[in-house]
Image (cartoon, rainbow, N blue to C red; front, side):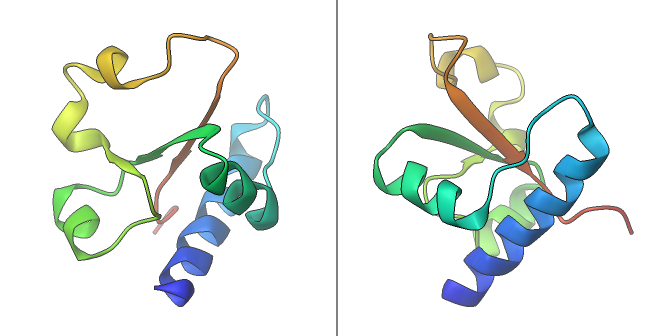
Amino acid sequence: MKKLLTLAVSAAVAVSVFAGEFPDITIKDLRTAIEAKKVTVIDVNGRGSWRKGRIPTAIDFASHKNDLAKVLPKDRSALVVAYCTGPT
């Protein structure tokens, strides 16, 4: 699970570079935020991948895409991290 978490977070950080307007988050900071329950993590890899393994607490985007607002924090300044496997 530790390797999966590291791989997934690495992919998330790498993808965030392409986002440009959003700040990066380090693996350490993400782990800290997850442990403190101060982040909403969204897995956008698809249901099959989500079922096989995911970052702890990650929400499966595919299962919530029609009602995502219901699972996101009400506070618009809250930390939300989305991740995928990156470009192929």
